[in-house]
Length: 385
Image 1: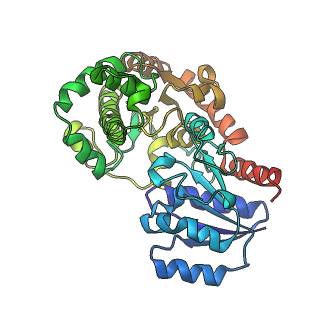
Image 2: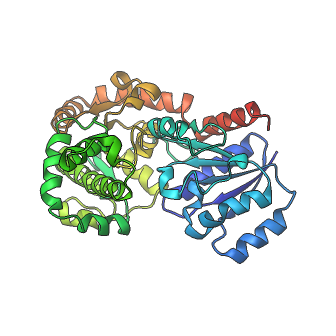
């Protein structure tokens, strides 16, 4: 089978893409790996040059390129090959399902709850969207011989303060008394972080408007309100969780952390070798999920797990599906519970390392990119491709 793989833009996506291409080739597939075309002329040239050369295409998050996304449906109709699309972010942000041609689309999604929602979407006429969680690359993330003593004895967090989104920043700023409403919702949400945030926001808005959820959910302005508040609350959760749960640990990510944790912010860091070195030098890796994930696990769980480093992660039902949380990870449902788990972990390093080793075995056994490629190929075979 010949596959046309289009490399997306981004900080982490190119690395995931490279690992997937390596996994496809490892199974004997012929892969042409090229960047996503960013201009109309580049798209047309690619169509001419690739005509009748491939059996399928592969792309992450539709390449996260606005021009390509706008032209993708026409691209599919012209190329006339099945396109494997793996969403490792919320598909809604990439215009799905309207941006794709159903006949030529085989979509996968990293988040189980979003996958369930998409399977019920009456606007999608293509094959069923399938659940495909994130994974790790054991050639990139692995245990390293530590130097004498840990570099980050109080743990580490690697990630942004928030997902960049200028539109939602502006939308949130335009909401009257947004800080007061945010404080009220956070008070409810922080009592149990396992609550589905979107459901909580719809309930809050319905009460505020004095209408049923069924009446307000079709309203485009209401949808923007929900996304704007999810954006703000996601940032607040991440900042408060990292600030309180690390309690002296190190933080790597965007410059926004300098405002909140000036004494612990270590600067930006490159994904891959640099992140692996930081993980291996830490007593544990903290994980806090972003609002675009309903239940999906983040890259940290798989990557740190693959390094054999203890992970303290926000609880989600998918932990029960992909891991054994009581034997392989440490999880929390509130920041207060996370604080207790952190102290438990730091006071018994050997017990934490035993869990970390179990997590590493699990990742190697079930959660590498080679496993994800095999699942994709199985799905294509079941579809008669």
